[in-house]
Structures are given as structure tokens and as C-alpha cells.
Length: 85
Image 1 (tube, rainbow, N blue to C red):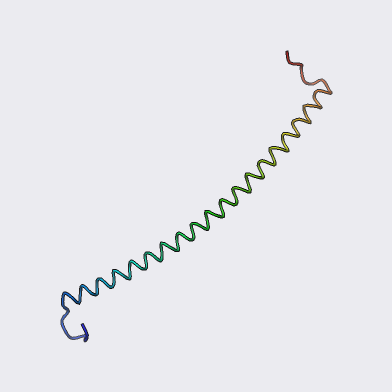
Image 2: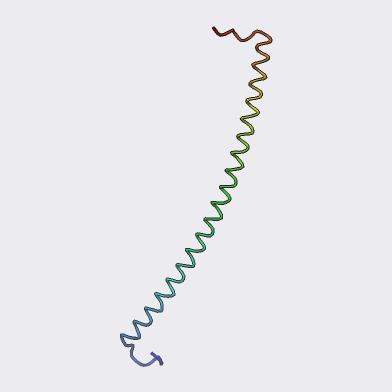
């Protein structure tokens, strides 16, 4: 397949198809790598955000516990809580 006028042989076709196949596989691998890198970045940012939210939730739960304790003390002082038997 050196000039544009000679008929194509089976070997020429096989070489051309093999070359195209190799190029396609390389492009697919590159796309896969880029997608995985993007996915890993997304997963890492979500993990960090979730960790931060869990820490904030723990802090809020602790603060709520303190408020509940203080409210119970006030209720006891005002005798709003009935004694348990």
C-alpha cells in the first residue's frame, strides 16, 4: 500500500485494522485513566466533606446534651419534673 494506485492486499488490510485497533485501545485506556482520576478526586472531596459534617454533628449533639442537662436542672428547681418512684 505504498502508492495510491496498487490494489490493497489482505496483509495491508490486516495491518491497517491492527493499527486502528491499537490506536482505539490506547484512546480507551487514556479515557479510562482520566475518568478514574476524576472519580478519585470526587470521592476524596466527598470523604473530607463527610468527615467534617460528622465532626460538626458530634459537636452539635454535645451542645444539645448540655442544653438538655441545664433544662432538666431548671425544671427540678421549679418542681416541674414529677419525682420518679
